[in-house]
Image 1 (cartoon, rainbow, N blue to C red):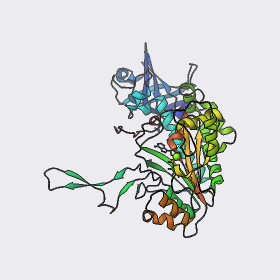
Image 2: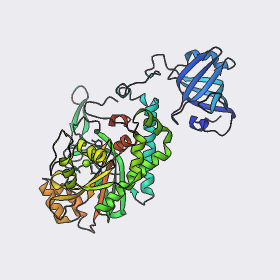
Image 3: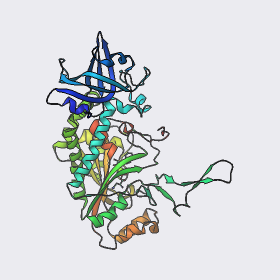
Image 4: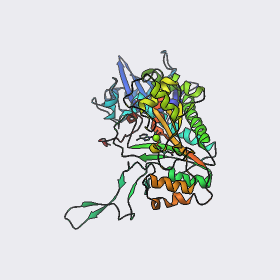
Length: 460
Ligand code: 4AD
Ligand code: MG
Protein backbone atom coordinates (compact mmCIF):
# COMPACT_ATOMS: atom_id res chain seq x y z
CA UNK A 1 0.00 0.00 0.00
CA UNK A 2 1.28 3.42 -0.96
CA UNK A 3 2.07 6.00 1.66
CA UNK A 4 -0.01 9.19 1.71
CA UNK A 5 1.67 12.42 2.80
CA UNK A 6 -0.07 14.10 5.70
CA UNK A 7 -0.41 17.24 3.59
CA UNK A 8 -2.43 15.24 1.05
CA UNK A 9 -4.49 13.47 3.70
CA UNK A 10 -5.41 16.76 5.39
CA UNK A 11 -6.57 18.23 2.11
CA UNK A 12 -8.51 15.15 1.01
CA UNK A 13 -11.95 15.75 -0.56
CA UNK A 14 -13.44 12.61 0.83
CA UNK A 15 -13.15 9.95 3.50
CA UNK A 16 -11.01 6.91 2.67
CA UNK A 17 -11.41 3.35 3.89
CA UNK A 18 -7.74 2.66 3.96
CA UNK A 19 -4.77 4.94 4.12
CA UNK A 20 -1.12 4.62 5.18
CA UNK A 21 0.64 7.56 6.84
CA UNK A 22 4.15 7.70 8.27
CA UNK A 23 5.72 10.33 10.47
CA UNK A 24 7.00 11.38 13.86
CA UNK A 25 4.91 11.60 16.98
CA UNK A 26 4.53 15.16 18.21
CA UNK A 27 2.35 14.29 21.21
CA UNK A 28 0.33 11.43 22.54
CA UNK A 29 -2.63 11.72 24.90
CA UNK A 30 -4.03 8.67 26.61
CA UNK A 31 -7.66 8.25 27.58
CA UNK A 32 -9.44 5.24 28.90
CA UNK A 33 -9.65 2.74 26.03
CA UNK A 34 -7.94 4.90 23.41
CA UNK A 35 -5.04 7.23 22.62
CA UNK A 36 -4.70 10.31 20.42
CA UNK A 37 -1.47 10.79 18.53
CA UNK A 38 -0.55 14.04 16.78
CA UNK A 39 1.51 12.91 13.81
CA UNK A 40 3.73 15.12 11.62
CA UNK A 41 5.73 14.04 8.57
CA UNK A 42 7.26 17.37 7.56
CA UNK A 43 5.14 17.71 4.43
CA UNK A 44 3.25 20.62 6.00
CA UNK A 45 2.93 22.52 9.23
CA UNK A 46 -0.19 20.69 10.42
CA UNK A 47 -0.29 17.36 12.21
CA UNK A 48 -2.89 14.76 11.56
CA UNK A 49 -4.63 13.27 14.54
CA UNK A 50 -4.51 9.48 14.83
CA UNK A 51 -6.87 7.59 17.10
CA UNK A 52 -5.82 4.19 18.36
CA UNK A 53 -8.39 2.29 20.40
CA UNK A 54 -8.48 -1.08 22.09
CA UNK A 55 -9.73 -2.77 18.92
CA UNK A 56 -6.39 -2.00 17.24
CA UNK A 57 -3.96 -4.94 17.62
CA UNK A 58 -1.13 -2.47 18.25
CA UNK A 59 -2.88 -0.90 21.23
CA UNK A 60 -0.58 -2.70 23.65
CA UNK A 61 2.40 -1.21 21.84
CA UNK A 62 1.40 2.35 22.63
CA UNK A 63 3.31 2.34 25.90
CA UNK A 64 6.52 2.63 23.85
CA UNK A 65 5.21 5.27 21.44
CA UNK A 66 6.62 8.52 22.81
CA UNK A 67 7.06 12.02 21.51
CA UNK A 68 9.72 11.89 18.79
CA UNK A 69 9.15 8.25 17.79
CA UNK A 70 8.70 7.33 14.11
CA UNK A 71 5.56 5.34 13.33
CA UNK A 72 3.58 3.93 10.44
CA UNK A 73 -0.17 3.98 10.72
CA UNK A 74 -2.71 2.13 8.61
CA UNK A 75 -6.32 2.98 9.03
CA UNK A 76 -9.32 4.87 7.74
CA UNK A 77 -9.46 8.58 6.98
CA UNK A 78 -12.63 9.68 8.73
CA UNK A 79 -14.41 12.94 9.42
CA UNK A 80 -13.17 14.43 12.67
CA UNK A 81 -15.84 15.27 15.24
CA UNK A 82 -13.58 17.96 16.72
CA UNK A 83 -13.51 21.61 15.64
CA UNK A 84 -9.94 21.88 14.35
CA UNK A 85 -9.14 19.52 11.53
CA UNK A 86 -11.56 18.10 9.01
CA UNK A 87 -9.96 14.64 8.88
CA UNK A 88 -8.38 12.21 11.29
CA UNK A 89 -7.06 8.67 11.00
CA UNK A 90 -8.72 5.84 12.85
CA UNK A 91 -5.89 3.33 13.17
CA UNK A 92 -6.36 -0.32 12.31
CA UNK A 93 -2.64 -1.00 12.69
CA UNK A 94 0.39 0.86 13.97
CA UNK A 95 4.07 -0.02 13.62
CA UNK A 96 6.75 1.55 15.79
CA UNK A 97 9.48 2.22 13.22
CA UNK A 98 11.97 4.08 15.39
CA UNK A 99 11.74 4.53 19.12
CA UNK A 100 12.38 7.72 21.05
CA UNK A 101 12.99 7.50 24.76
CA UNK A 102 11.34 9.77 27.30
CA UNK A 103 14.45 11.96 27.29
CA UNK A 104 13.85 13.09 23.66
CA UNK A 105 15.06 16.72 23.76
CA UNK A 106 12.09 18.29 22.00
CA UNK A 107 9.27 17.78 24.45
CA UNK A 108 6.08 19.73 24.00
CA UNK A 109 7.08 22.98 25.71
CA UNK A 110 8.37 25.88 23.63
CA UNK A 111 12.14 26.13 23.36
CA UNK A 112 14.31 29.19 22.88
CA UNK A 113 16.05 29.78 19.56
CA UNK A 114 19.39 29.57 21.39
CA UNK A 115 18.59 26.12 22.78
CA UNK A 116 17.39 24.93 19.40
CA UNK A 117 20.59 26.19 17.74
CA UNK A 118 22.47 23.73 19.92
CA UNK A 119 20.12 21.05 18.56
CA UNK A 120 20.50 21.88 14.88
CA UNK A 121 20.10 18.20 14.03
CA UNK A 122 16.65 18.06 15.61
CA UNK A 123 15.24 21.57 15.26
CA UNK A 124 13.67 21.04 11.81
CA UNK A 125 11.21 18.79 13.67
CA UNK A 126 9.71 21.80 15.43
CA UNK A 127 6.87 23.79 13.89
CA UNK A 128 8.93 26.93 13.46
CA UNK A 129 12.01 25.39 11.89
CA UNK A 130 9.99 23.02 9.75
CA UNK A 131 8.31 26.14 8.35
CA UNK A 132 11.64 27.98 7.90
CA UNK A 133 13.11 25.17 5.87
CA UNK A 134 10.03 24.54 3.76
CA UNK A 135 10.07 28.26 2.91
CA UNK A 136 13.80 28.04 2.16
CA UNK A 137 13.14 25.23 -0.29
CA UNK A 138 10.23 26.99 -1.97
CA UNK A 139 12.25 30.23 -2.23
CA UNK A 140 15.02 28.42 -4.08
CA UNK A 141 12.46 27.10 -6.53
CA UNK A 142 11.05 30.64 -6.92
CA UNK A 143 14.51 31.98 -7.78
CA UNK A 144 14.94 29.50 -10.62
CA UNK A 145 11.38 30.07 -11.80
CA UNK A 146 11.85 33.84 -11.88
CA UNK A 147 14.97 33.76 -14.04
CA UNK A 148 13.87 30.93 -16.28
CA UNK A 149 10.80 32.93 -17.29
CA UNK A 150 13.12 35.78 -18.32
CA UNK A 151 15.54 33.65 -20.37
CA UNK A 152 18.29 34.26 -17.86
CA UNK A 153 20.42 31.13 -17.56
CA UNK A 154 21.53 29.33 -14.41
CA UNK A 155 25.32 29.45 -14.31
CA UNK A 156 27.49 27.49 -11.87
CA UNK A 157 30.32 29.67 -10.67
CA UNK A 158 33.33 27.83 -9.26
CA UNK A 159 33.58 27.42 -5.49
CA UNK A 160 37.38 27.27 -5.58
CA UNK A 161 38.87 30.45 -7.02
CA UNK A 162 42.19 32.20 -7.39
CA UNK A 163 40.79 35.72 -7.15
CA UNK A 164 39.18 37.98 -4.58
CA UNK A 165 36.09 39.49 -6.15
CA UNK A 166 35.33 42.01 -3.45
CA UNK A 167 38.98 42.85 -2.82
CA UNK A 168 38.22 42.92 0.87
CA UNK A 169 40.62 40.13 1.80
CA UNK A 170 37.95 38.19 3.69
CA UNK A 171 39.04 34.91 2.17
CA UNK A 172 39.16 31.37 3.43
CA UNK A 173 42.29 29.80 1.94
CA UNK A 174 42.19 26.17 0.99
CA UNK A 175 44.98 23.65 1.09
CA UNK A 176 45.44 20.00 0.17
CA UNK A 177 46.38 17.62 2.95
CA UNK A 178 49.03 14.99 2.34
CA UNK A 179 49.73 11.93 4.40
CA UNK A 180 53.29 12.12 5.58
CA UNK A 181 54.15 8.41 5.88
CA UNK A 182 57.73 8.91 7.06
CA UNK A 183 56.66 9.90 10.50
CA UNK A 184 55.24 7.09 12.58
CA UNK A 185 51.68 8.31 12.55
CA UNK A 186 49.66 10.02 9.82
CA UNK A 187 50.80 13.56 9.90
CA UNK A 188 48.73 15.91 7.88
CA UNK A 189 50.73 18.58 6.15
CA UNK A 190 48.99 21.52 4.58
CA UNK A 191 50.22 22.17 1.08
CA UNK A 192 48.75 25.42 -0.05
CA UNK A 193 50.68 26.10 -3.20
CA UNK A 194 51.61 22.61 -4.36
CA UNK A 195 48.21 21.51 -5.60
CA UNK A 196 47.22 24.42 -7.83
CA UNK A 197 50.59 26.07 -8.08
CA UNK A 198 49.08 29.21 -6.61
CA UNK A 199 47.04 30.33 -3.68
CA UNK A 200 43.46 29.15 -3.75
CA UNK A 201 40.44 30.18 -1.72
CA UNK A 202 36.72 29.66 -1.36
CA UNK A 203 34.74 32.10 -3.46
CA UNK A 204 33.31 35.26 -1.87
CA UNK A 205 31.15 35.88 -4.94
CA UNK A 206 30.58 34.32 -8.35
CA UNK A 207 30.26 37.71 -9.98
CA UNK A 208 33.50 37.94 -11.94
CA UNK A 209 32.93 34.56 -13.57
CA UNK A 210 29.25 35.39 -14.15
CA UNK A 211 30.30 38.55 -15.99
CA UNK A 212 32.30 36.45 -18.43
CA UNK A 213 29.33 34.22 -19.15
CA UNK A 214 26.90 37.13 -19.45
CA UNK A 215 29.12 38.30 -22.31
CA UNK A 216 28.21 35.10 -24.12
CA UNK A 217 24.76 33.96 -22.98
CA UNK A 218 23.38 37.48 -22.54
CA UNK A 219 22.01 37.00 -19.06
CA UNK A 220 23.03 34.52 -16.38
CA UNK A 221 22.62 34.07 -12.64
CA UNK A 222 24.51 32.16 -10.03
CA UNK A 223 22.85 30.61 -7.02
CA UNK A 224 25.23 28.88 -4.69
CA UNK A 225 27.24 29.04 -1.51
CA UNK A 226 29.74 31.84 -0.92
CA UNK A 227 32.21 32.22 1.92
CA UNK A 228 33.50 35.14 3.91
CA UNK A 229 36.03 35.16 6.70
CA UNK A 230 34.82 38.46 8.08
CA UNK A 231 35.01 38.25 11.81
CA UNK A 232 31.78 40.09 12.42
CA UNK A 233 29.58 38.27 14.84
CA UNK A 234 26.32 39.95 13.87
CA UNK A 235 22.82 38.56 13.41
CA UNK A 236 23.13 39.30 9.67
CA UNK A 237 26.47 37.74 8.74
CA UNK A 238 27.49 34.14 8.27
CA UNK A 239 30.80 32.67 7.13
CA UNK A 240 28.91 30.49 4.62
CA UNK A 241 25.84 31.89 2.94
CA UNK A 242 24.04 31.53 -0.37
CA UNK A 243 23.94 34.29 -2.91
CA UNK A 244 21.89 34.85 -6.04
CA UNK A 245 23.88 36.86 -8.57
CA UNK A 246 22.34 37.86 -11.88
CA UNK A 247 24.62 39.41 -14.46
CA UNK A 248 23.15 40.95 -17.62
CA UNK A 249 24.83 42.22 -20.79
CA UNK A 250 23.57 45.42 -22.42
CA UNK A 251 22.11 46.59 -19.11
CA UNK A 252 22.79 49.80 -17.22
CA UNK A 253 22.23 50.81 -13.62
CA UNK A 254 18.54 51.57 -14.19
CA UNK A 255 17.95 48.16 -15.73
CA UNK A 256 19.76 46.70 -12.75
CA UNK A 257 17.52 48.51 -10.26
CA UNK A 258 14.44 47.36 -12.18
CA UNK A 259 15.62 43.75 -12.04
CA UNK A 260 16.43 43.97 -8.32
CA UNK A 261 12.99 45.37 -7.60
CA UNK A 262 11.25 42.78 -9.78
CA UNK A 263 13.18 39.92 -8.23
CA UNK A 264 12.45 41.02 -4.68
CA UNK A 265 8.75 41.44 -5.39
CA UNK A 266 8.68 38.23 -7.39
CA UNK A 267 10.15 36.19 -4.56
CA UNK A 268 8.04 37.79 -1.83
CA UNK A 269 4.90 37.34 -3.94
CA UNK A 270 5.73 33.71 -4.65
CA UNK A 271 6.14 32.92 -0.95
CA UNK A 272 2.95 34.77 -0.01
CA UNK A 273 1.09 32.71 -2.58
CA UNK A 274 2.65 29.29 -2.01
CA UNK A 275 3.60 29.24 1.67
CA UNK A 276 0.58 30.94 3.23
CA UNK A 277 0.16 28.40 6.03
CA UNK A 278 3.80 28.53 7.10
CA UNK A 279 3.86 32.34 6.86
CA UNK A 280 0.90 32.53 9.21
CA UNK A 281 3.00 30.90 11.91
CA UNK A 282 5.63 33.65 11.62
CA UNK A 283 2.99 36.39 11.54
CA UNK A 284 1.49 34.96 14.72
CA UNK A 285 4.54 34.02 16.79
CA UNK A 286 7.60 35.75 15.35
CA UNK A 287 6.72 39.16 13.90
CA UNK A 288 3.24 40.61 14.25
CA UNK A 289 4.02 43.18 11.54
CA UNK A 290 5.17 40.57 9.05
CA UNK A 291 2.22 40.58 6.67
CA UNK A 292 2.04 44.38 6.66
CA UNK A 293 5.76 44.51 5.83
CA UNK A 294 5.38 42.05 2.98
CA UNK A 295 2.30 43.77 1.59
CA UNK A 296 4.12 47.07 1.73
CA UNK A 297 6.97 45.59 -0.33
CA UNK A 298 4.51 44.36 -2.94
CA UNK A 299 2.42 47.51 -3.08
CA UNK A 300 4.31 50.38 -4.69
CA UNK A 301 7.56 51.27 -6.39
CA UNK A 302 10.74 51.24 -4.30
CA UNK A 303 12.38 54.57 -3.48
CA UNK A 304 15.50 55.33 -5.56
CA UNK A 305 17.85 57.65 -3.76
CA UNK A 306 21.35 58.90 -4.62
CA UNK A 307 23.85 58.19 -1.84
CA UNK A 308 24.53 61.94 -1.52
CA UNK A 309 20.87 62.57 -0.65
CA UNK A 310 20.85 59.60 1.73
CA UNK A 311 23.70 61.21 3.64
CA UNK A 312 21.82 64.53 3.75
CA UNK A 313 18.72 62.83 5.13
CA UNK A 314 20.75 61.02 7.77
CA UNK A 315 22.80 64.01 8.89
CA UNK A 316 19.64 66.15 8.96
CA UNK A 317 17.63 63.67 11.04
CA UNK A 318 17.18 63.93 14.79
CA UNK A 319 17.88 60.23 15.24
CA UNK A 320 20.81 59.33 17.53
CA UNK A 321 23.11 57.02 15.59
CA UNK A 322 25.99 55.07 17.05
CA UNK A 323 28.11 55.77 13.95
CA UNK A 324 28.45 59.18 12.36
CA UNK A 325 27.70 59.63 8.67
CA UNK A 326 29.36 61.92 6.17
CA UNK A 327 30.00 61.73 2.43
CA UNK A 328 32.55 58.93 2.06
CA UNK A 329 31.47 56.76 4.98
CA UNK A 330 29.74 53.45 4.42
CA UNK A 331 26.18 53.20 5.67
CA UNK A 332 25.77 51.04 8.76
CA UNK A 333 22.75 48.83 9.41
CA UNK A 334 21.31 51.47 11.77
CA UNK A 335 21.39 54.04 8.94
CA UNK A 336 19.99 51.64 6.39
CA UNK A 337 17.14 50.67 8.69
CA UNK A 338 16.38 54.30 9.51
CA UNK A 339 16.01 55.13 5.83
CA UNK A 340 13.82 52.18 4.91
CA UNK A 341 11.81 51.79 8.14
CA UNK A 342 11.40 55.30 9.49
CA UNK A 343 12.12 57.91 6.84
CA UNK A 344 10.50 56.31 3.80
CA UNK A 345 8.60 53.35 5.24
CA UNK A 346 9.36 51.29 2.14
CA UNK A 347 12.27 49.59 0.39
CA UNK A 348 14.96 52.03 -0.75
CA UNK A 349 17.59 51.63 -3.45
CA UNK A 350 20.57 53.84 -2.67
CA UNK A 351 22.83 54.42 -5.68
CA UNK A 352 25.95 56.30 -6.84
CA UNK A 353 28.18 55.61 -3.85
CA UNK A 354 31.65 57.16 -3.44
CA UNK A 355 34.22 55.05 -5.26
CA UNK A 356 36.41 54.94 -2.14
CA UNK A 357 34.03 52.61 -0.30
CA UNK A 358 33.16 50.28 -3.20
CA UNK A 359 35.09 47.57 -5.09
CA UNK A 360 37.22 48.11 -8.19
CA UNK A 361 34.77 46.65 -10.70
CA UNK A 362 32.01 49.23 -10.33
CA UNK A 363 31.58 51.67 -13.21
CA UNK A 364 33.10 55.07 -12.60
CA UNK A 365 30.64 57.95 -13.00
CA UNK A 366 31.35 61.18 -14.91
CA UNK A 367 32.10 63.02 -11.67
CA UNK A 368 35.13 60.73 -11.13
CA UNK A 369 34.11 60.56 -7.49
CA UNK A 370 31.18 58.14 -7.42
CA UNK A 371 30.48 54.76 -9.00
CA UNK A 372 27.28 53.29 -10.46
CA UNK A 373 26.67 51.18 -7.35
CA UNK A 374 23.32 50.29 -5.83
CA UNK A 375 22.22 48.74 -2.55
CA UNK A 376 18.65 47.68 -1.88
CA UNK A 377 17.63 48.32 1.71
CA UNK A 378 14.58 46.65 3.23
CA UNK A 379 12.87 46.89 6.62
CA UNK A 380 14.24 44.69 9.47
CA UNK A 381 17.18 43.44 7.43
CA UNK A 382 18.91 46.52 6.03
CA UNK A 383 21.00 45.61 2.97
CA UNK A 384 19.35 42.82 1.02
CA UNK A 385 21.08 43.41 -2.30
CA UNK A 386 24.39 44.93 -3.37
CA UNK A 387 25.33 45.48 -6.99
CA UNK A 388 26.37 47.86 -9.72
CA UNK A 389 26.88 48.60 -13.34
CA UNK A 390 30.31 47.18 -14.17
CA UNK A 391 33.30 49.04 -15.55
CA UNK A 392 33.33 47.91 -19.19
CA UNK A 393 36.07 50.33 -20.36
CA UNK A 394 39.44 48.60 -20.38
CA UNK A 395 41.64 51.61 -19.58
CA UNK A 396 39.40 52.84 -16.79
CA UNK A 397 39.30 49.36 -15.29
CA UNK A 398 43.09 49.09 -15.42
CA UNK A 399 43.35 52.39 -13.62
CA UNK A 400 40.83 51.34 -10.97
CA UNK A 401 42.65 48.07 -10.31
CA UNK A 402 45.86 49.98 -9.75
CA UNK A 403 44.12 52.52 -7.51
CA UNK A 404 42.74 49.67 -5.43
CA UNK A 405 46.19 48.12 -5.12
CA UNK A 406 45.27 44.99 -7.04
CA UNK A 407 47.61 43.07 -9.32
CA UNK A 408 46.56 43.32 -12.96
CA UNK A 409 48.03 39.97 -14.01
CA UNK A 410 45.80 38.03 -11.60
CA UNK A 411 42.79 39.50 -13.42
CA UNK A 412 44.02 39.22 -17.02
CA UNK A 413 40.95 37.22 -18.05
CA UNK A 414 38.63 39.80 -16.50
CA UNK A 415 40.40 42.56 -18.40
CA UNK A 416 40.54 40.50 -21.58
CA UNK A 417 36.75 40.26 -21.83
CA UNK A 418 36.80 44.08 -22.13
CA UNK A 419 38.91 43.73 -25.27
CA UNK A 420 36.49 41.58 -27.27
CA UNK A 421 33.03 42.99 -27.70
CA UNK A 422 32.73 44.68 -24.34
CA UNK A 423 29.23 45.87 -23.39
CA UNK A 424 27.69 47.99 -20.67
CA UNK A 425 26.58 45.33 -18.19
CA UNK A 426 25.23 45.11 -14.70
CA UNK A 427 24.45 42.73 -11.92
CA UNK A 428 23.93 42.32 -8.23
CA UNK A 429 24.03 39.87 -5.35
CA UNK A 430 20.99 39.06 -3.24
CA UNK A 431 21.79 37.38 0.06
CA UNK A 432 19.49 34.37 0.13
CA UNK A 433 19.44 34.17 3.94
CA UNK A 434 18.73 37.88 4.23
CA UNK A 435 15.75 37.32 1.97
CA UNK A 436 14.58 34.48 4.22
CA UNK A 437 14.91 36.75 7.24
CA UNK A 438 12.80 39.37 5.48
CA UNK A 439 10.07 36.97 4.48
CA UNK A 440 9.81 35.15 7.83
CA UNK A 441 10.60 37.97 10.25
CA UNK A 442 13.33 35.82 11.81
CA UNK A 443 15.97 38.22 13.14
CA UNK A 444 19.04 35.97 13.38
CA UNK A 445 20.67 34.58 10.24
CA UNK A 446 21.64 31.46 12.22
CA UNK A 447 17.99 30.50 12.31
CA UNK A 448 17.41 30.38 8.55
CA UNK A 449 20.50 28.25 7.76
CA UNK A 450 20.29 24.48 8.35
CA UNK A 451 23.77 24.28 9.87
CA UNK A 452 25.07 27.83 10.35
CA UNK A 453 28.78 28.62 10.22
CA UNK A 454 29.81 31.68 12.21
CA UNK A 455 32.96 32.62 14.15
CA UNK A 456 33.68 29.98 16.83
CA UNK A 457 30.75 27.84 15.68
CA UNK A 458 31.29 24.70 13.63
CA UNK A 459 29.67 22.03 15.69
CA UNK A 460 28.00 19.99 13.01
O1 4AD B 1 27.31 43.48 -1.18
P1 4AD B 1 28.04 42.21 -1.44
O2 4AD B 1 29.33 42.00 -0.74
O3 4AD B 1 28.23 42.16 -3.03
C1 4AD B 1 28.91 41.23 -3.73
O4 4AD B 1 29.45 40.26 -3.29
C2 4AD B 1 28.83 41.44 -5.21
N1 4AD B 1 29.94 40.73 -5.85
C3 4AD B 1 27.50 40.96 -5.72
C4 4AD B 1 27.32 41.19 -7.17
O5 4AD B 1 27.25 42.32 -7.59
N2 4AD B 1 27.21 40.14 -7.95
O6 4AD B 1 27.11 40.97 -1.11
C5 4AD B 1 25.85 40.84 -1.74
C6 4AD B 1 24.79 40.48 -0.72
C7 4AD B 1 24.61 41.52 0.38
O7 4AD B 1 23.74 42.55 -0.04
C8 4AD B 1 24.00 40.68 1.49
O8 4AD B 1 22.61 40.48 1.28
C9 4AD B 1 24.70 39.36 1.30
O9 4AD B 1 25.14 39.30 -0.03
N3 4AD B 1 25.84 39.17 2.21
C10 4AD B 1 25.84 38.34 3.27
N4 4AD B 1 24.88 37.55 3.77
C11 4AD B 1 25.19 36.82 4.86
N5 4AD B 1 26.39 36.82 5.46
C12 4AD B 1 27.40 37.59 4.98
N6 4AD B 1 28.60 37.56 5.56
C13 4AD B 1 27.13 38.40 3.84
N7 4AD B 1 27.87 39.26 3.11
C14 4AD B 1 27.07 39.70 2.13
MG1 MG C 1 27.31 45.13 0.03
